[in-house]
Length: 195
Image (cartoon, one colour):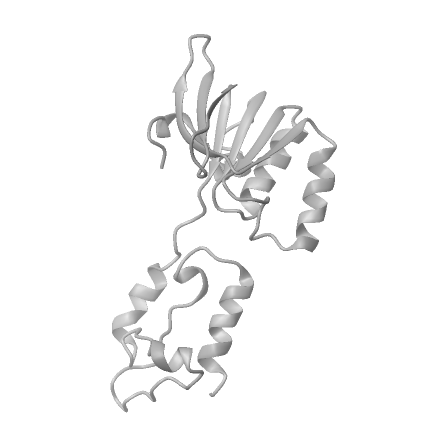
């Protein structure tokens, strides 16, 4: 969330879905380091816009594996795209000329800059997709609980008590938080390797 101007920005998903058309001079702020920011930036750049992709991280898209990053970079570098690392979008406000004034700072302190653009696109990641988990939780034998000490030690989860529920339920992957496929597979492997 921004200190000011959340109502003035759009999400990468707004651009990708086509609900919002790309601007002409666009700041894409990637706070999650995953695919949607790069996908939105690519779509915006292909429309002919000038694009700056900004991240508070020391490198771009740390959640995007190297082999996947190469096609993005090949595509983006062919267009009018600037890459800015270690800067964070702090607030957005309207400027007097009808555009937007984006205030950016650094987590490393003492730096504040402005960007004059006509669109700010943010990628803060996604929320967990956990509705199904909570719907199934009361029907499960373990009530959706994970024995974390056993999980950490590589030990199996406790066996279900007969008659206590229809199945065991474990919350993994994007039901916990927005993560990559590798994290979900790793969670699943640790939970079911002893079955």
